[in-house]
Amino acid sequence: MDKEHAACPAETAISLLGSKWKLLILRELFKGMRRFGELARSVPGISQKMLTQQLRQMEEDGLVSRKIYPEVPPRVEYSLTDIALSLKPVLDAMHKWGAKYMMQTGKTEVGKRKRSAA
Image (spheres, helix red, strand yellow):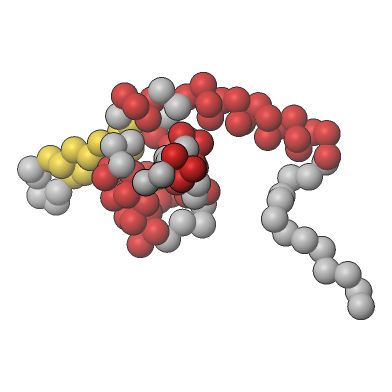
């Protein structure tokens, strides 16, 4: 890889966290350990398939730890790793900025554009 295309730390962060689902999962896991069903209920709009996919990817990336208990039925708990916990100030700053944006613009939803009456 040449220097012009060397890995960019910001690009790495975006690739690890760039999905809205990952940020919402992180938000819930900052509250503490959660089971799959708890996460599914607390992240509105996420399908079980997407939650499974995102948790697997976050585990592979070293952000989420999964603990399986040898019980019937099996119990699985998810928690944040130390590296993910270090994101707390970053996510707090994003929350603060988002609240300021919403207050200043009056927008509570983004990404949904009004269609002009043509």
